Image 1 (cartoon, rainbow, N blue to C red):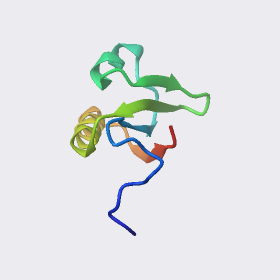
Image 2 (image 1 turned 180 degrees about the horizontal axis):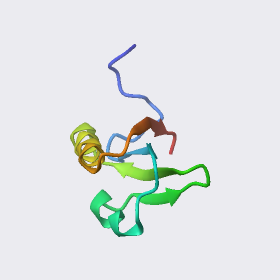
Image 3 (image 1 turned 120 degrees about the vertical axis):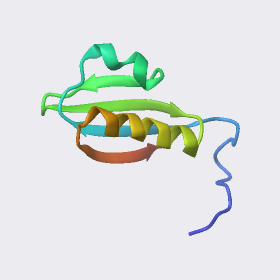
Image 4 (image 1 turned 120 degrees about the horizontal axis):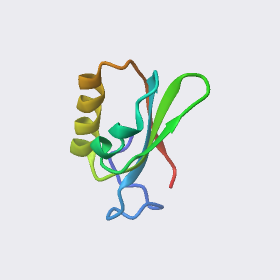
Length: 80
């Protein structure tokens, strides 16, 4: 694995992530997740999708997930 930046990606643009949770979050939590799109899926999962400025911001989002007590299913970086 290389530590070199990918030539296709502009380093000034945030990466887009999807965070999948077990259970449904109420819509009132959308603002708490800093503008991520909150999608309630038919299978009972919640999908949070959107740009994340950097790794520190990603860890901050994951702390919020932990604080809600919902099981974390996956975190993936999406090609933007």
